Length: 155
Image (cartoon, rainbow, N blue to C red; front, side):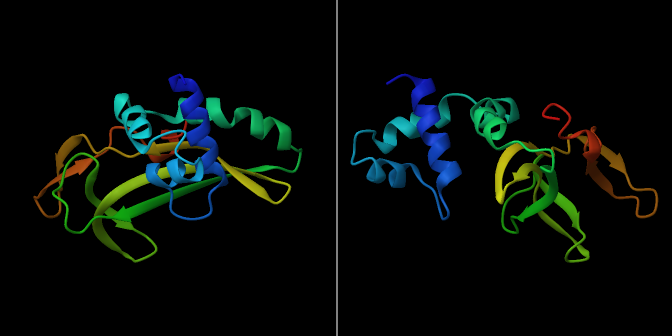
């Protein structure tokens, strides 16, 4: 089985699952015809991005596409309180909790139509630049890209 076929199977597994997904779970679901090691090697081989996701879900979106379909864009933070800070895991202001926290800030884009939603894009916000806060004098991180531009390669 080539990598594209394995990626298709894994992507369909992710799209159709309602709970936790793992390489071991997929291997078990397929009765061992694909090992979890094959899946791990595929995922560890190269980074996958929003364009890869779109390539997989595009045929499904085209089948369910309707004039009243909508794109839902969400800005979320996965809290990582006990992880060392870096460009991706760093301080972000969480509006839902009205405080700053350490975590991964990511943008997701779903297409919703006919009662179904499919992920069509994502972007992880990396804060690669440093600046000095004028009020506190502290050194802080910021992203060189605005949030509104984060999903532009997909949209």
